[in-house]
Length: 171
Image (cartoon, rainbow, N blue to C red; front, side, top):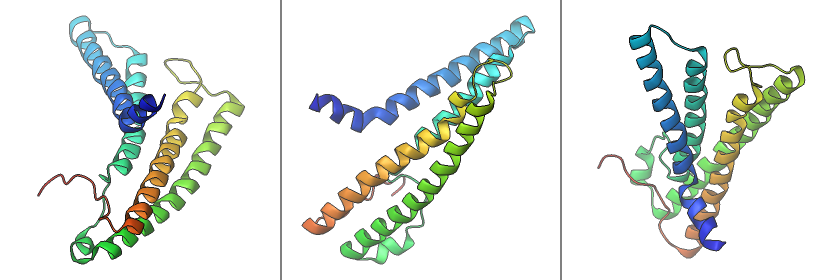
């Protein structure tokens, strides 16, 4: 059980991103072939691509928080010492968590309204709740990864280790 949770913690977003990306590319490929070869396209294909992209974006946001790969201005970090750097990262995580809680609340409100009125998608004719849930699911994952980051940074700060800065894209 412990190894499974470790594997999920390490790769859950990657696996979900792979599923949604494959769904997006596969559906888009089929729809382009249908449009060019058969002069026919379906409305459901466009919707699947759109909603897969939305899930891809929100799960990708959580993955970016986990790897500290989200957009940030890190000029100050070059000049800060290890303790100041850890405190700046902790402060940034707290600010991001406050914003994520507010966004989670309001995005969940939209899901509840959609469920209350029974809105459905135009092409697939299924409840929009499944697709509107991408935003609160994404923010819940972001909050989970922020909590992990916060705990990791506090532990590193207490033990005198340098804070995790993520992998650099360019050096």
